[in-house]
Length: 101
Image (cartoon, rainbow, N blue to C red; front, side):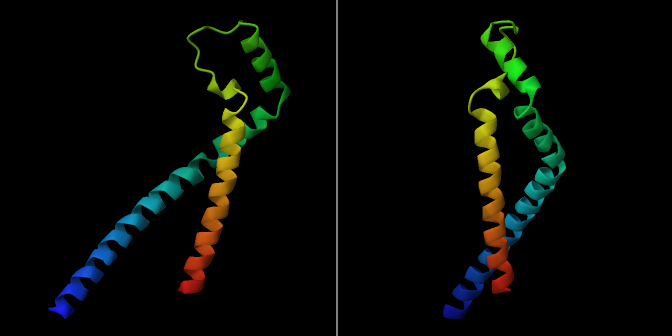
């Protein structure tokens, strides 16, 4: 019975890890495809155009129904930080995975 339980447990690990890797690959594909757009956002955030848009927003010159979270004080800044922390985490996990291989 011990052998059967062990095989079942290992099969569950195999199935779960296979599914996780599939999801990670899909997420990495999406991240890679969006990287150019992300760089465009970062460039905008540090530009005069952003400052002009921010000013016009504060002056009430933009339509009330315009979604403009990108002009908030923190949204893009926080995203840049999250992107950086995710990159660090991917490097650390990737390094561990390679070393444990």
